Image (cartoon, rainbow, N blue to C red; front, side, top):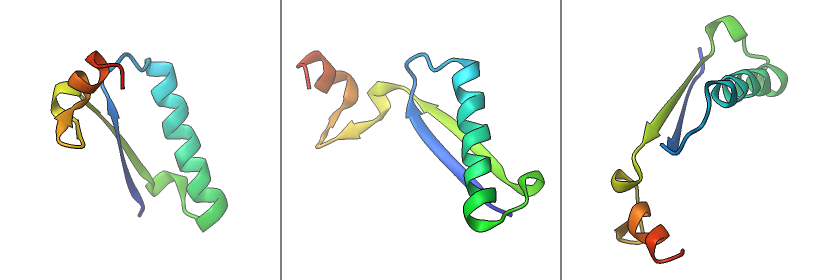
Length: 67
């Protein structure tokens, strides 16, 4: 029973885009590992850029500086 947790910054991924991710990841596990899609869980967590840090600072601050 695979469980895949995908974390992305909360910046407007549409419901359709997230559905494509869920479908694609599920299919990948079917194709590569022969997993049952009915027991494959894919969870997408959207994280505010203030709560996602890289190199000691938030994504929000890095983007303000153009990085």
